[in-house]
Image (cartoon, rainbow, N blue to C red):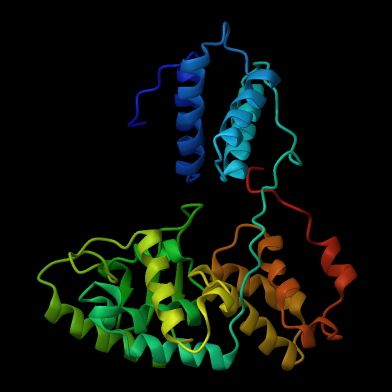
Length: 325
């Protein structure tokens, strides 16, 4: 761990970090909050190394009093740390899973075909003036179409390197996912042609960059930068709609839209979703079946009454899974 910890829990947090890392988890967010917990403990100087209810609630209440809004992340981090301590034979207070919601309250926005067309038209007409990045007008039309047609996570598409892409076969090697589990996806012929033309333009623009979708300086897009680019295109696609009335759109919503469109097509074709879901799960890189089946619950209203979905059967196959479990 890069940051030096100084509290009485320093060794336990470092051991927790190494343990989770060896398990293959991406735990940067959890460690970020545990660093804050370490700083709080340095300030409060607890007398022993016990993770007590008083200490946990005190830290969370202190953050709430200071106006922080990332309380679910803080609660989840200290909860999984406590579970780790218990597994090591130590006494620790485990925050109840209902204390803070571990599921985001953000409702995915599923774009209609007309909205997708308007969004992609905006990416095609994007200018340097709009986004402050000279290469973004070349990158945006291809990057967002790839997200929409492949269901990649934003972190995955940002992390694609030139060596991951085979423009002869249309295969993309995906390595940058939250479980660090690799997979290969294959893009459509139309998408492959777009990517091939894009590669030619990119090679003319850059002398050297390892990323397939780089910033102007050749570096990797950050999550915030990709979100800003998405927001620019979304507003350009809806110039007649006041910003206050425009639904929020995140890059991750293209993944939601992809999954919904695939399920919608299968329902229209009369296919058995319970037979087909494992294929979608593998393509999208989900670890749990429930993560894939979740998308059935956000399908357009006209499909919610479809006889192709047995809701009681589906719900029984979808246990609630918290992100910290």
